Structure formats: structure tokens, C-alpha cells
Image (cartoon, rainbow, N blue to C red):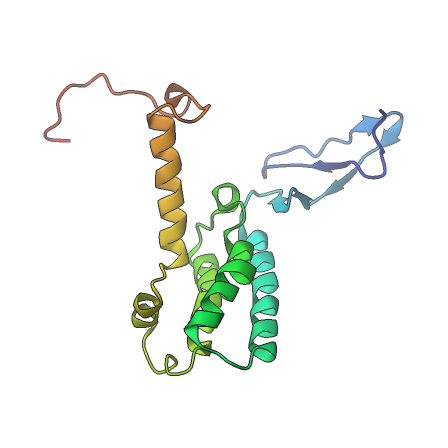
Length: 178
């Protein structure tokens, strides 16, 4: 099977990249600043802001559709809808693009803020109280939890990844004083 050169792109990663032109089957490949692969946007600077913005936009549209179409807004109805239709957009493949800038974390958390305010009687409560009453975690806590679970699987050998490939074991047997 031959590559379709019109669909192939070159992504020059890093600021010190020399931006060489590449050819495939005699055709010069076009370069781009960002590309989408399996639903994850990879940019030339490897920052996750464009992924966060895309996830926010999709989730915000679906949340707006829920708000417009559902008339009986009890937590029993809205919570399963939120978990099924909205949350997958902001949690899809987050180990690959987990936000590290505060502005991106705040942007994603706005989705859950808006959802919790949609429920009647919850809009006057503060955000953490709303989450506690709905038995939800913040999105950042969920990302941290999934990272810790994956690390536990790697450590226990339940994953195909060897721990030595990621971490260098300490040879120091002292556990006190740093």
C-alpha cells in the first residue's frame, strides 16, 4: 500500500528545529504547526492548550444542548447525562495531553462548574459543596488519580511497561535527611 502524499504532513517539533523539507515519492511534504492523531492534537511546541480548548468547546456545546432540551432537571436525570455525554470529552486520552498550565486547568473545570450550576437549588452553593452533594471529584483530582493508578500498575508489573525504563532505582539505602 502506498502513502497518499497529499495527506502526509511534517510536524517540526521544538524551537531549535532546522525546518528541513522532506520528500516522499518525489513529492515535497507540507509542514504544519499542529496535527490531530487519534483525537489528540499534537502541536509543534508540544503544549496542550489546543487540546484543552477543543475539549472545552465540544463539552460546552453538548452541555448547552442538555440544558436546552432537558426540562426536568433533577440530579438523578442530569448526572448520568453529564457522565455519559460531557465528561468523555474532557477526559479523553488525558494521559497524553494532561494540562499543565493553570489557565487550561481552569478552562476545563469551567465545564463542571456550569454543569453543577444547572441543577435547581445548587447555583447558590459554592463549587466544592456542589461537588460533594453530587459525589463528584474535580477534573484535576480525576486526572491525578488516573496517573497514580497507571503508575501503580507499572510498579506492580501489571502493565507492559518496565519500571526501569521510566525510573532509575535509588542505590542509596538511607531514608532520612533527604
